[in-house]
Amino acid sequence: MRLEFRTTKLEKQCASERSRKKAFGDERGRRLGRRLSALLAASTLEDLRSAPGRLHELKGDRAGQYSIDLDGPYRLILEAVGDDETSAPGNTAWSQITTVRIHSIEDTHE
Image (tube, rainbow, N blue to C red; front, side, top):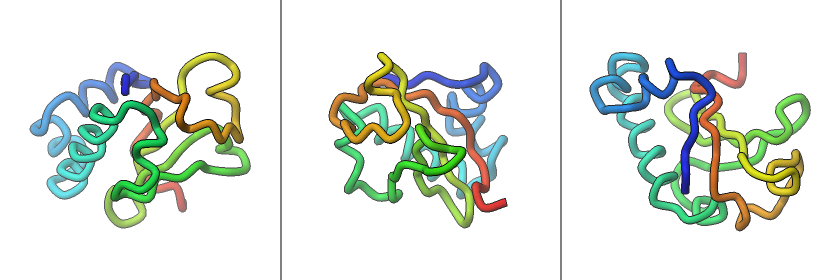
């Protein structure tokens, strides 16, 4: 799968193990590295539905975004990138999503 980043700052924070640990702490940085590696190794988003991390589509005002568990309440937030059909909120054709944008790493419960 192809990864994009919402901001240059986020891309730099995710670029290496050292930068992930510096930006997010040891445990979250390690888990983030594993999730990014899994995303890169997958062909489509569908490949990750049963992988560790509980990938799921968000609802409400976050429709069109996907969440993967990191540690505690923190999640890796993704958005599908592509044509209007594959990136539309509520799209269930996960097997067609081949590019995602890393939106943020955040506590979605605040």
